[in-house]
Length: 117
Length: 107
Image 1 (tube, rainbow over the protein chains, first blue to last red):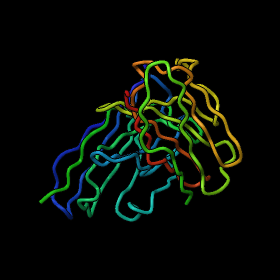
Image 2: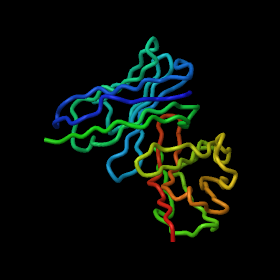
Image 3: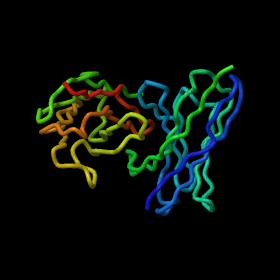
Image 4: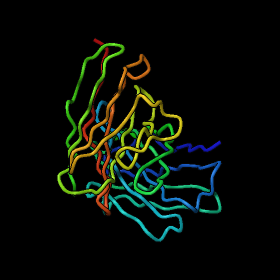
């Protein structure tokens, strides 16, 4: 079945780096845009970044631009988010999601990133 | 970037009630509006896209409408499974923006 599974979350110190992964299955990965969305504890949803199926089209929220890098490995049907210069404001559950046009139809279960000294 | 303003932020209702949630975009987004449902500890679930098109598997008691830059999600007869937080999401061609959410609670 169509599925997205995130991994790579954990505890990191302010200023540190972390790489999130999202493994896709059940659909042709290269046919879709993929996105990262995050949700701080007890807060709402915030779009983080998107990438086209070929990897050539990317976009970032202003809050992460210059610090986060989205990428894909089509051979592994995987999406990544390299995060650097992390701050406490980056603490959140990070979801990967499949984009069907301009909305997200399939979501992973999320991976928690905690930035704390 | 567009701003998406949802109202109300919280709502108490009873089983069988009809409820509406509104979402206003700060600029024209055509019909690029989606609605999601999220339950505690779970990922969001797509309910509706293009303002009023129901995602496969979503009960028909959910419906959407659009009037200019104002979008409405309606649940015609609340069921126990519907108590959750609802988010609207717009797209301006460059970035995605979510509303702040509406928490629907049992009265």
